[in-house]
Length: 77
Image (tube, helix red, strand yellow):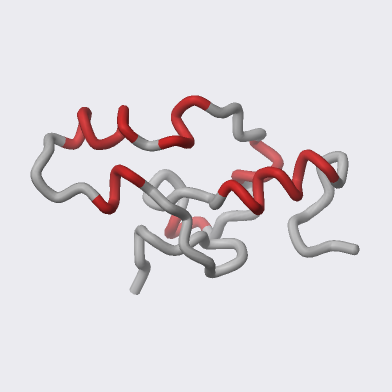
């Protein structure tokens, strides 16, 4: 079972505004999520398990780690 509030890469809270909101339409919830203002590279998205792609947010920490490691997999040294 997937939890939309958990980052699929590090299993920390992803702070997803869309998943946390319960009283809004799907379009409004998606527009509220912080990740909608970021470029998330396809290479990082490819690290998300297939069943979770387009269903959960990667957390800001994993996105920052990806960029600071010049595109290596999150968690690589």
